[in-house]
Length: 506
Figure 1 (cartoon, rainbow, N blue to C red):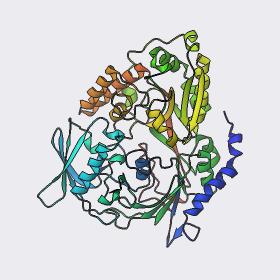
Figure 2: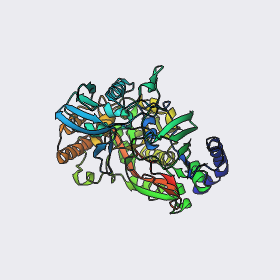
Figure 3: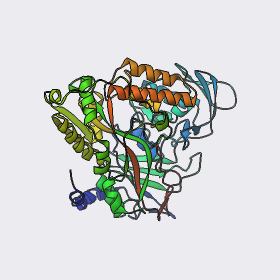
Figure 4: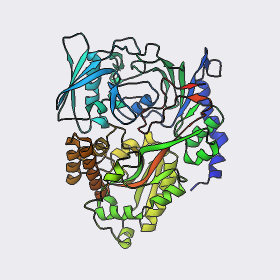
């Protein structure tokens, strides 16, 4: 495992590589200034992986940069509140009516019912399907008559989470101009306080203030964004004042930056080892049990996360406060294979990605723990954009990922459906288990909050019982900015916001 000293020795080279794209997207003055306000300079961890498509993780990046919006948004408790929809009402268990506010797209087109229908229909036809739609289908139609633009949305089954679901970044509302030439392009066609005006591949992006925004106008005139998968480079850019905000500061760099730059807060993110239940060594549940028994979460918290994480207790961590009190023991576990049986298995491929700097170190420690149990392990570590398709196709035996369990609907039942059911759209473990599907379906059918939470924990127990995912640690987020200069950065456990209309350099 690299020491802090070996990581720091490469800082000048990494910083130089990062500063080149930063300089390229700076304002003409070179200082980032524009009139009386200063442009924000932000370095993000995840380069665009799908050409800024709104139907994958690129949508989250656009949401974190305040470019896109949906019909609703979420408050700090995960409850839906108005965004492009000023109000809504439930007409029946499967039918809702949303009344739109007076707003325009960044290209000047009016936000109307036709635009909403077009956007939601396109999301439902996207391939792959957005994770937020993995357990439901939506049919949107414009409501004729009346003075206000209204949209009727019908779901296949009763969906009490529809208002929260519509806040998902993949269900952003875009103008007709976004849907041309066979692809969806949000640049200049969204509604957020910042307009995406330029993208330089996986290197940089430029945002300008949207002066026609329906809400409070952005305090910064624009944002110059650089993408850097290397976490040390992001931290060093902040240290040298090449950027104002650095997303996801590595744990190894937090103590070096100092308290004024480091903003740590609990998250809903669980880092876990997905085991391929569909093929290879881990198709045998006894081998999955052996892998689970090999993992020492405390060693990961201390050795990799330097105490800035929490010991794994389940799929849902401290960022979801109600989970611990409702957790039940895993159900249906298979006894573990012996060390002798494990030693006879073929080599397993353990994969993870570089975008979160702790994950390769965690993979090294996990490899050592698995090898101590008798497994033969080979690592594959690359940028996430190069790995996602293979991970979803089940080409790895084990995949270490950091997953926000509230990202899709602010309700973990949607996460359980997308990641662990037979038809789940983000099922890296390739799990297809009747007990799990039944437990998730039961949780999804409930409307009462307490009953839904309890059923969700029953589903968690079934997933853990199948050993489809071995929880490693519960992350804490560390965002970097100088709080004596930068104001209005969102510290969001659900990871949907970072830069807002209020973010500015003081």
